[in-house]
Image 1 (tube, rainbow, N blue to C red):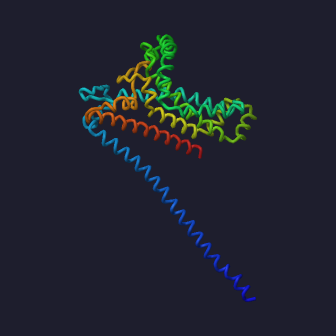
Image 2 (image 1 turned 90 degrees about the vertical axis):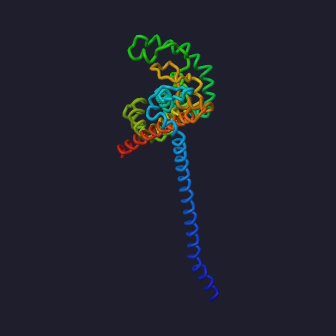
Image 3 (image 1 turned 135 degrees about the vertical axis):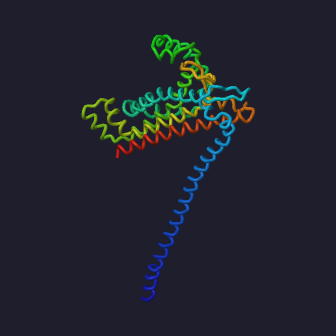
Length: 330
């Protein structure tokens, strides 16, 4: 009888010890996980800081040589070491704006079609096809743009725009000049095609998060599909939609090879969208391997620093907009 009692008491005494050991093991794993995630975050910040420092250090000779005037000068003469960033900044901003003006409405329309109007058997194949556009290398877009899109634009699009807006104030300046085929408008078309999958895919995903009861309520009140999208779906998903648009804008600002093929690579500021131009990324890609001398190389690195600052400003504005939207929603 005493043996039975001892056997029943022994496990009860060891149970708290086993529980304490298990909790200690869990706490140790949690601390390790906490430190690993902290190290990962520090690595990311260190990489970002290293990129900024390297850009600033490499830009110092050009900053000392040209100062603030580098941002507003149109000069680009490697022979005399006279450089300016205005044409590249202008081309980067203009082509990105053209791309977003085209890609945002089309992307939202595609997302609306896939979530509300497309037959169910076709939704997945069309969605996969759109997402595959994001996987095409940019140099393929550039080759296609140079040999297919540019001749089409030169033959049909640019002559039509010149004749249509030739007598309209302001627009006649935006669409003036001979139809080269290549130029900032063509580069904007290429960028729009490249950023379209990002905007369409993200918008489709966030549209799918809208509770069906909200859509059914809008339909029950007699709303059309357009009214439901405008007054129910877009307000509910505006944070995600803005995030997708900003992701596409970031891709457009930094795109290199596709733009290099079709923009014309001319270091000048022209009010006409049909004229050749250049961007920051295209200038760096075209001339970095040929840069001879500290000033030339430093000017190209300073262009990279300017692109970094522009991208940072765009992301900061996007983050500020999202914070305001979240505050209003709360």
